[in-house]
Length: 328
Picture 1: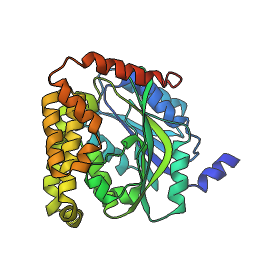
Picture 2: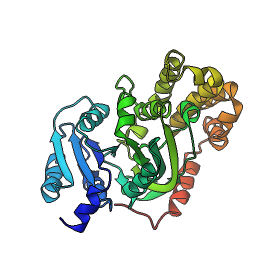
Picture 3: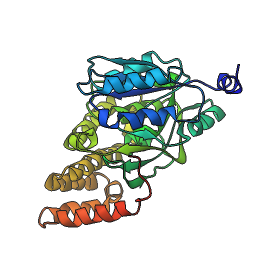
């Protein structure tokens, strides 16, 4: 037995699932970012939804080259991302699990850093780090840092970047897996349920880079996020996981749902509706709404002024600060 094999046997197994559908353009980099992790004890699954591009050929190539790492894959029709994640994690043998979308990438050392923290505290159910935002060409244009949040923060729709999350399999199973009755906010709802029963912890390190492109759901379906948030809020007072916290923080939770909807509506270019949702957020809990004060101002003036050019220049200037960071 080699030294690396002995080392792996002494470390908890980590299962990583990659759901994918017609993402051949980005798939190589996504898969390679998992295979390149320095953590030695990983089982990696790719669950493809029957892609019509050459995704299957790409996955097969990596499986043949690294069968000890990419141990299983499938390409067959499924019922979407949540179904693919549930399918993959039902096969998981790892004590720690995560999933990475096939257009995102892990940054160096992400798995090792997450496992190190989880090993130190057996009461932790979930850890999360920061993420970078990149465009369709892999150019980083923003860095997103989070905070040390708990259940009530997550219930008020403080959104953790999903690619930065690692959790115990027992926590995932106790939360019931991915709830497919929701369309877009399945990740935040899962993390809320885990936080209702386990400790969660923020790690101030960059774990992943998330790709923003026209086909990504955070872009193509931006106008639907608020509806999903309000659907979750309607459920909270009737759910034993959330009922007590909801009753203590109803106004802040509603404000958070409206703020989230406004945020995505603004990104989707629906400025009038975005401003109206920010207004509803402010009416419920002013401090929550005002955390996005610059975006509120932008949504208001965008209804009357041709400021798309200013927005474009701002985004270009912001991206210019990250010209040395590209994951093409």
